[in-house]
Length: 107
Image (tube, rainbow, N blue to C red; front, top):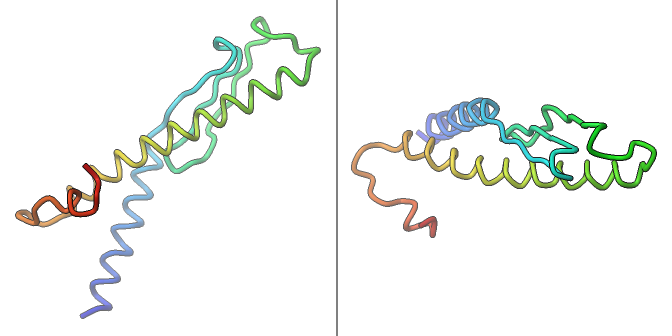
């Protein structure tokens, strides 16, 4: 009985991870000087640098802006992943299960 239950949970976890990989968020720093796209599975998909908006001869500025944009993108990705995870889990629940999220403190 438990093998089937755990197998089902594992399959649903894999499905959830695959679906999260389909969602992306964008963040920027330096008024668009650095743009970062991150997946909700917390990988960096793309980094773009607009050389017209920063001094490429100032590596510290470039590094700082990349760091800010990457951290913001990962924060947004985590937030979006939490929302999407909750939606996907609710879709997996059998009808009539009640407000499980409320019992878990997710209001």
